[in-house]
Length: 116
Image (cartoon, rainbow, N blue to C red):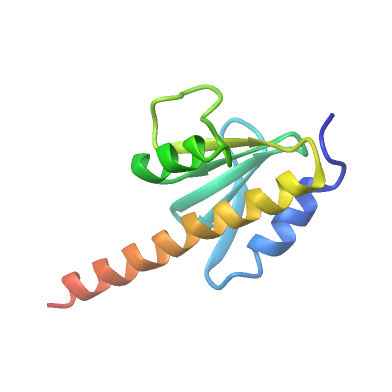
């Protein structure tokens, strides 16, 4: 059974981070982006969160039991967290923050390279 209010709690936290925007996700739910285009993850109601991360980090998180491979496309650079208990919501926020931090670093690196 999903955690009631999970999406709302995740959205409240993630949108407090500088540069995060929200959009409707193409398969339903809410998409969280750094800027307008760099998706860091998305929710599907209160049931689950898909988070985009590098495959090496995906493998680490799965091995540690902190996340599962993406529920539909298990070979992509993304994980799924099913929101069954309140601790899952906090874990999802932590991993969304990892994705966000990577997006911020990538954007800064791109900005440095393009200004040279």
